[in-house]
Amino acid sequence: MKGCLLIHGYTGAPFEVEALAKHIHSLGYEVLCPTLHGHGGNRKELRKSTCADWFESVENSYFKLSESCDEIAVLGFSMGGLLAINLANKYSIKCLVTMSTPIYCFDTINLYLDIRDNIESRNFKRIIEYAYACFTPMKSNINFRKILWTTKPLLKKINVPLLVVHGKRDPVAHQRSAHYIYTQVSSNQKKIMLYDSLKHRFQYCNNPHAIYYDIGKFVQAHL
Image 1: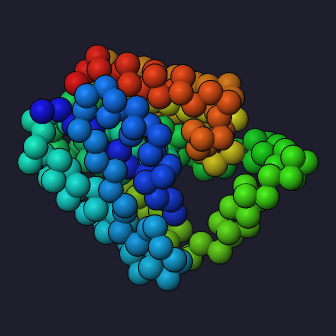
Image 2 (image 1 turned 135 degrees about the vertical axis):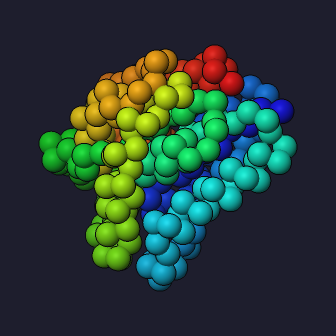
C-alpha cells in the first residue's frame, strides 16, 4: 500500500489541503491530513503549543500511516512544508512536495496588491483573515520562526525526489523561498513549478485543479 501525508500550514487546518487530498486519493493512494497540535481551534490553544508539538503531530501521523503503507510521500503546505522537510530528514520517505513554503516571509508588493484587490472586490472573507492574523499569539510566532530557522540547515541533507510549488503572487511566502529550497537540497531529482495566478492558498487560485494535477503527476512518478 502507498500513502500520502499532507500537512497544513501555520494557524491553518486540514481544509487548506483538503481539495488536493481528494485528488491524490482519487489516484489510488491512502491519504492522511492531520490537524497540528494547537491548531483548528482558538488562539488560546495555539498559544499553548510549540513547534516541537507541531512536529510531534506530524511524526505521529507518519507512524500511523506507516502501519498500512510501505511507501509514503509527504506534502506540506506553507509551514507544513518546513515540517515535511524535517520529517524527510529523519525518516524514510519516497518523495517530498513543498507548497507555498516560506524561507523568506512576506512579499511587500504582493501583500499590498492582495489587500488592495480584496478591498476593491469587497472580499470581506480575505480581509477578515488578514485582520485575524494580526492577533496571532507572539509566542506562536516565535515558535514558527524557530521551525523556520532550524529547517534551513537541513535542506542540504534532503536527497529524495523533490517538487517545489510556489505562486508568483504569493504575499506570505516570498517567491525567493522556492528558489532557495530548490538550490539548497541535495536531491538529484528535483523540480520547481511557479504559477502566475497562485497567491498563497490554492483555493484562491484561478485554476487550482491544474496545480493538483501537476502535483499528482509528480507523486505518481515517484511513489
